[in-house]
Length: 297
Image 1 (cartoon, one colour):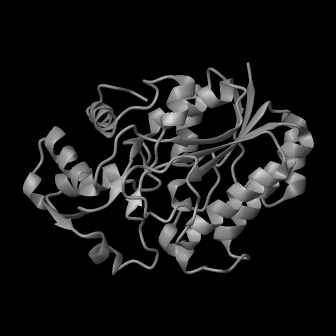
Image 2 (cartoon, helix red, strand yellow):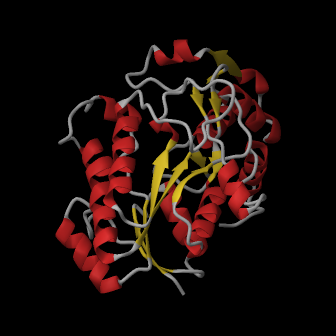
């Protein structure tokens, strides 16, 4: 049984990975208070004691709006976790000769690719501080020389995580309470059910591959389409949903959202097969079954 060290295991994706795959792998996931990824000595002692085969770094500062208030501050918590923390984990994996899977984001791009979703061949050009810190983390991982996979994920959603709101639960909660929703009509996104993400990560752990992979839904939607699909499958009031342009939405935001905030997972599917990652619509169908209690996780 492979031994997996997980950092950031309390987040939406990390906690689901542990929950679903703890019977497949021997997983140890110290909390941030137990092991601080900014403390190299703590990292080294943990790795020496546990001796993992693979390290997965889910740890990230993901508050995009708050991150923008730290813009340019490399001593700020966002840069420290997303860039320096990633560097420390990658340097540890190089020193200990451990394999690393580092989790990143579509925010490393600038959101201007209109015709088709971003592939692994597209050049990053982050437009906000969160994206810049995550891209810095990617670069530190690549430069470390460790055996690494960088897995970019996009808008994970699940009905079972209460510590932070995701887009599916946000829309569902608004609709169920009878409140109006403004949903962006001209943005393309690939929201992805968290189960699909962690099952793809399992395949990466079990492989001996290296490099960069996009892990996302196989189809894309606008947030407006996403909200309307939720209203339809839950039989809620469709007329509570109102369109808004991205430009209008961004007026109230410090950190501007990407217009084309989508990923292409074709590389992963070509190497690992179809059916692991699914469409947005299939992800919402599973979300509905989970909410109804027909699927237990």
